[in-house]
Image (tube, helix red, strand yellow):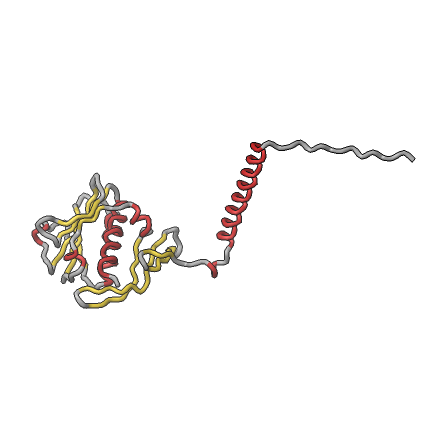
Length: 220
C-alpha cells in the first residue's frame, strides 16, 4: 500500500514589531472592556449599595432634588457650630455643589472676627438698580445665619446705608453685580462685607462660597 505523505504547513514567523503591536492591541481591548464593565457596574449598581452622599472636608453632603422641579440643593446634615462658647446644631443647605465652588478658588478676604463672633443683627443691602434675582443670593446667606439664630434684615431701598453704620452688634453685607467676582471686608470697618460677582448666578455661588467659608471656620 502506498504511504500517505502528510504535508507540513509552515507558519509564517511574526516579527518582533508585529508581536509588540499584537500585545498592545490585546492590552487596549482588555482596558476597553474594563472601562465598559466599570461603567455598567456603576450605572446598574442597586441604589442601596451606592453612597447617597459625598465627602467634603469631613462632612457628608447629600444632593437633594426639589420636588416637582429639576433644581438640586446640597444638604449637610447635623453640623455642630461653636461661636463664642455657644454650640449650635443644624443642617446647612446651599444651592451649589461645594466641590465646584472650592475649585473656583474664589477670593475671600474676611477676618475671623466677622465669622467667629455673634452680632445682634445682620443687615443685607444692595443697589436699587439690581434685579429681583438678587434675593436668591440673599437667601443663601440668610439660611446659614438662621442656623446661628442671627436675625437677618434687608435695608429698605429708601434708606441710605454705608459701612459707617456697621458695628460689632450690627453688621452689614452688601451684594452687587460688577465685572469681578470676589468677597472682601471694608478696610476701616471689618463688620462690613461686600460680596460681588459678574452675574446673578455667580453672585449666588459667591454667597455659597461665603457660607462654606463661614461653616469651615466655626464648625467642629
